[in-house]
Image (cartoon, rainbow, N blue to C red; front, side, top):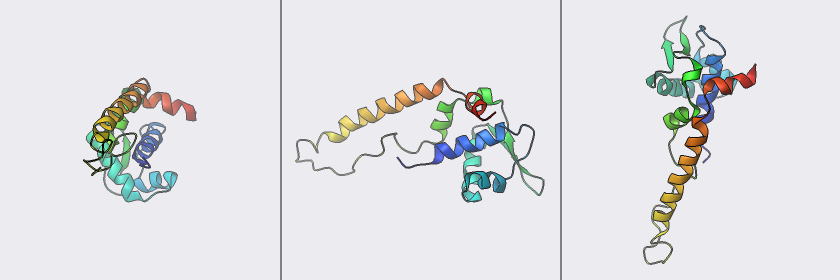
Length: 136
């Protein structure tokens, strides 16, 4: 639950959306978020795989949005970087002899799925463009 990938991806995309037509370096983006540029490059790769970001290498290189910010839903960003359920992970080996332990993960799985669906539904109504407008 302490995963910052969604926040990092949104920060990157917001910076790129606010600089249309400009190549932003991973070092510059990292300076805004105050994290290692290698983490930025990793997330840029994920965003590039989705077709949202284009990048070019070299001294004059960098990254920019490859699609209009209105075409990127926050739900899709969440899905692209999600590594676990919103509520976290289940305990791996609850006691099968315990009346709760033997059933708890099945019940938690359903709760986790429902919670993720609620979050996805809420985010699906918001686009990167909507989010970026808060910074104008």
